[in-house]
Length: 148
Ligand SMILES: C[S@@+](CC[C@H](N)C(=O)[O-])C[C@H]1O[C@@H](n2cnc3c(N)ncnc32)[C@H](O)[C@@H]1O
Image (cartoon, rainbow, N blue to C red):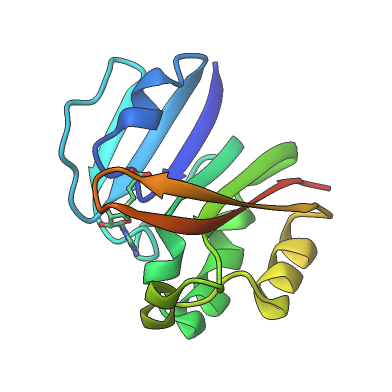
């Protein structure tokens, strides 16, 4: 079975529906029950010693809660566990949003250079979504890069 690694899985809603993959889903706090194909690990993903190689590494609205220095120093190690032709997918908040000022802005050259040099080329898609829960719009972006 193909392997996927999720950084910041939250309540496991994505990991649990990714039934084509054997998923390692990591979060500091997991609220949910892992499906049979999911291994849920409560930890800081930058502290976990990743052992396997993955066909897919993905993260939704999580990386930006970490410091730039930590992302720069530790994300490359995680991305080295992507298999050749493996896919990296990131959805995160983009910079033209006030709340992001409290977070690390990943919609920037330093981050894109990091992904380009550790995974491969990609295009950036930006859009606006309305979040029912908090009653406001989020500016988000997505990148999908294929490991060279
Ligand atoms: C906004 S939530 C998103 C959760 C889920 N991906 C989703 O889309 O619903 C951000 C999550 O990232 C987790 N997180 C952020 N940095 C983390 C880290 N370094 N290690 C583990 N979990 C982290 C938080 O605990 C939180 O559950």
